[in-house]
Length: 135
Image 1: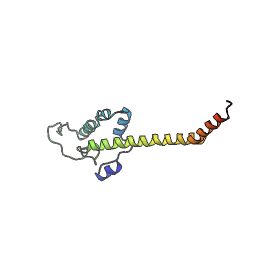
Image 2: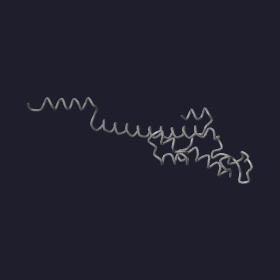
Image 3: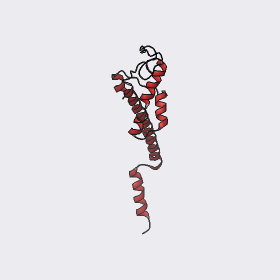
Image 4: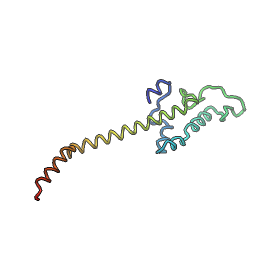
């Protein structure tokens, strides 16, 4: 995903980016919940407030705003790329979470293996105990 963003010239957001923080707070469990997060609308509205324009790009005086400073929430992201940037960074966040959870699982399994032994060792112990049990 990082490579995909880099190849398209799209930014990879830091974990504390406001849009990612809002997404994490929602704790989406399905793709539909992720889509419903509506970050694209939120980011576009943020850009309009920064540029002092409405959703049609008009200023309060009714004139079309120039594309100057504050035209978008992130200067490196055009409005048409915003959905891709949000999806890519959302996916990266989920991948990082999966990696973290898998790492914890591997550490727990390693600890259990050191404490209790592997499957073969436990099986051997049970067979030995069964053979030595009085009949």
